Amino acid sequence: MDWSNLPIDLLRCISSHLSIVDLVRLSVVCTSWNFTPSNYALLGFQCRPSPWLLLSNDDGEASDTLNFRELTIEGEEAVVSFHRCFSSISNHIDGRRCFGSKDGWLVTLDKINLQPCLFNPITKAEIWLPSLQEFIKPQFAPDGSFRNSSNENFFDITSEDLRDIYFHKFIVSSNDTSGIVVVIYGITKALALACSEDLTWVHGPQLSPYNTEHKEQFEDVCYNEENHTFYAITNFSRVLAFDLNGQNVELICPNRPNPYYRIKNFDCMYYIAFMSGTLFKIERVIDITPRRNHNATTLSMFVFKFELDVVTSSSSSYSQWIPVDELGEYSIFVGCNQTFSLHHTVAIGIKPNCIYFADHWSNMFPGYVDCDVGLFDLYNDRIQYILQPYLRTNWPPSIWFTPSFS
Image 1 (cartoon, helix red, strand yellow):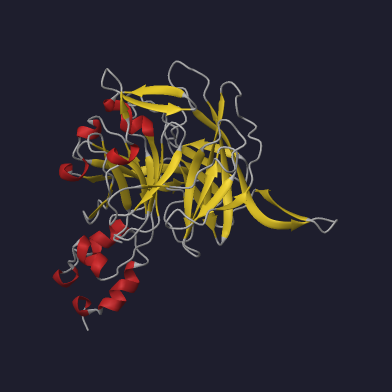
Image 2 (cartoon, rainbow, N blue to C red):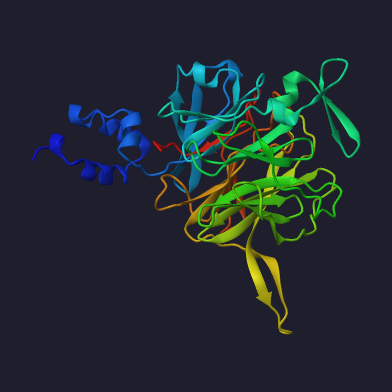
């Protein structure tokens, strides 16, 4: 048997050991292997995950190109090296900002219709979601701006800035037409849910039955595939679980003090993720002291795992977050993207036991966000900044992305 006649099952097995770039190279070896990205997806080909960083470009949202840098290791340092570019895709991304990613898909949103779309830049596949325009039902101020109230205070937002101020993050359960998407939106960071088959978005769980803090709001959401449940965390570490319809809400963890709340020049962002069946919380401490060149810099990371029903000496029990300094062979990726973890022997070019962080919305303004990309090594509590602050506008913010044919 010659190479061109290798069974599809064997090629599929080979592909699982290759990066997506090597798999594309494989397709040009001979005509019988010359599959298109869409064919790879239909045939069930999977490749080794390789984290890429989606970067801003000089043309901003008017560009027809997505620019990525591949993550790798040189010596003991993490670097972004190879430039991966997807061009001539203006009909998919023109006028749209990337708000997140999951397993090779980007979540994009336009300014006019506020209609989210899941887009795979490898296969060019799209999944459209209902418009958010009707759902938020903004009130028009006399000057034509949008007016939204929070705690009886009114915020006037121009239509140009509405998308970038009002919508924060999208979280996806699965990359198909039946997948549920959760959006964190609004001045108070509320939750809403929809899938591509819905006509409109619906409100997610409310904090009001549990809220004891005046400024408590949702920070991050993760999806647990094992029990088909979303978990949302607030800026006071409160965790709520809810089903794919936004119902059956359960209080998993009550709120905890936020040591950085109302402390000048410091902020703290919270992320949440499931890893090997355990719920993890990541606290990201950010220095927001005004400086001439840039303002926001990540200073430290703290990781906690959630333990339910901890039994005390008096036989009573309670739930708590336990500090950890060991993620085993895994690393976690946080930022504007959907929080995810990768095993360093499976993923290409990552260090184990690290928190990789990308740009965040802590100090975000439309058209500009501070460049803050690096990793926190839990072994030695050391931060390595992967990118230096840009001399040009850093917009849209960078996000982590794992290319896939899925």
